[in-house]
Length: 124
Length: 76
Image (cartoon, rainbow over all chains, first blue to last red; front, side, top):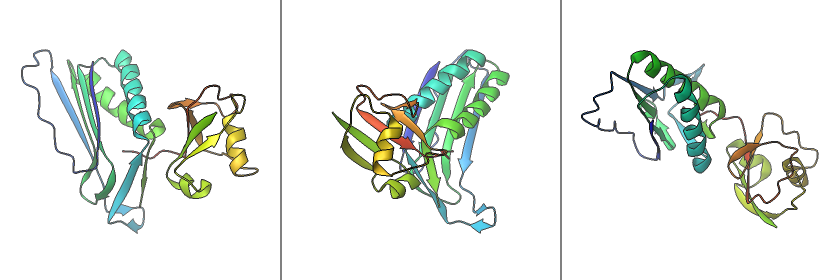
């Protein structure tokens, strides 16, 4: 499985799709957006930081582990760092798979695992 | 030997640094090292990574070059 893991301190731009992937039957995408309300608190944005080399390593491991259960063709992940204003994306994920089932499962499980173990933090 | 110590998020305030070098012994564990900085520290939900791999608080660090103290994560 092809993996792309990118951290950026500028706005996330949707990456172009590679053309001619004849085996791909499903393309699943997720945008995580900073919302204004966190409980009762009204936010202007969130500040993200990461232990970047370890985060890249952990994400690679998570993707490899999940690919055993949910085989996919490619995963692309972009996580923003620094200040992210309300309404802008902090996370983009795209999973390309042969079938939608594996691609959807892979994406959902990746985000769950990211939130459990990948050294990234947000603060108000 | 000199080991690079890293602290992130709220732990930077608690430990008083984001990055520093510290003289450590091969037989020392991460718990002993953090205990030298804050006496009687309760590591609670904090995890430790040795050379960018999650590690045990009570395992000697051996030839480690980098120790990171990792508070509960919240990416996404």
